[in-house]
Image 1 (cartoon, rainbow, N blue to C red):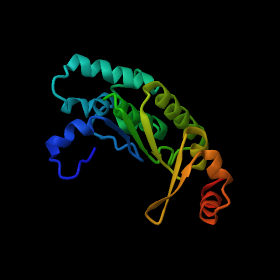
Image 2: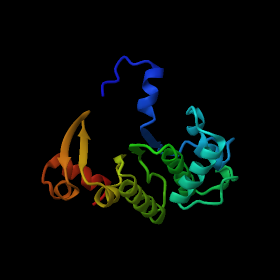
Image 3: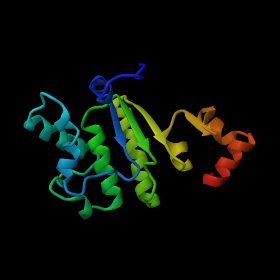
Image 4: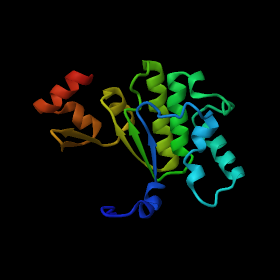
Length: 180
């Protein structure tokens, strides 16, 4: 769908199709976990407070964080903040999920948990997920198609297996730099 030239108001129905997990979760420090997850829902018209509360609870349950609604982001670990950001993205029931470096700054165990969560959510939602990452372990475990950008253009598109097996020097250099 061409969105060039659309007004902000015309873009709203399109924006509602997308959920976004930001690299550093982008939580509002002044809001509770529930407030952060409900943030986008409050902009939608016709959603009651009860419906918002229900959707917040469901989203937190999906990311295994039920019961922390009243906590502030400063009280959470990095992995928990990342999952709250994911719950916020999921609360609007998106058709498309965008993940910006979802495992950056996380320890290997938490990174694996986030990867598993992304794979699980993608399967359950039947949503299209786009993951921007340099984490090759994530690439090999959660994606179906790799699209590698180089010098501002898509340089490679294919399966993770084909990507990993490529003898192309640009791809080999990327893999060697960011992990086997």
